[in-house]
Length: 84
Length: 155
Image 1 (tube, chains in turn red, green):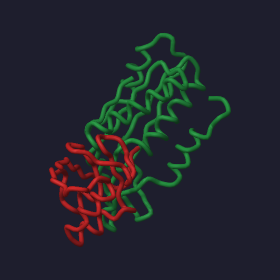
Image 2: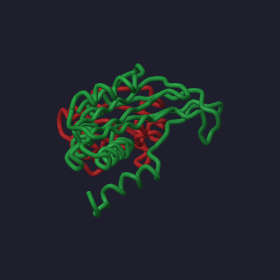
Image 3: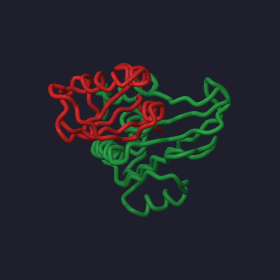
């Protein structure tokens, strides 16, 4: 299943990535599962994408970690927001 | 009702003129301008860097404005948020509202900036002598936003 990933704020900077297309393994169906899969990429990923350090959006709507992901979703991973 | 996200500065006076010219029914115009402070817990701020999520940020702001406009019968709303590198004393954000009366214009303006801080995807990085630090949503900002949800008296 192919999905589009976007990174903003601290994880984007620390992992030096702004976007990528990934093909996630069969059976991976939630944001929590996606983050766990990405964390397996290495120590930096494990630290920066810890569940309590990041927030997510699916197709430009804020979403909790139990939310379901689908083929071709645009999924953003970022640190807690701080505008204004 | 219009939203701009831009790197360049804005002219407060010109924005106020444009907003009041757009409705002759308005009896009140309120504007809020957020500025870059020169201090933080980590000391003197050299600059800040603001990032946003193109597409989602505009959508989130339009939703917030729509809620405010309905709740307080706002006649006009203008929101400008700057991105990129900013320095102490620079303008960061403008929220301006017009309404028939001042109470609605004040409340609508305050609601929009309080919601913007907790529901619009912007990220702010502070650069001080101690290094760079990404800021996170403050508890006090969450409480201000929740106040509007729990506010059952009046509007």
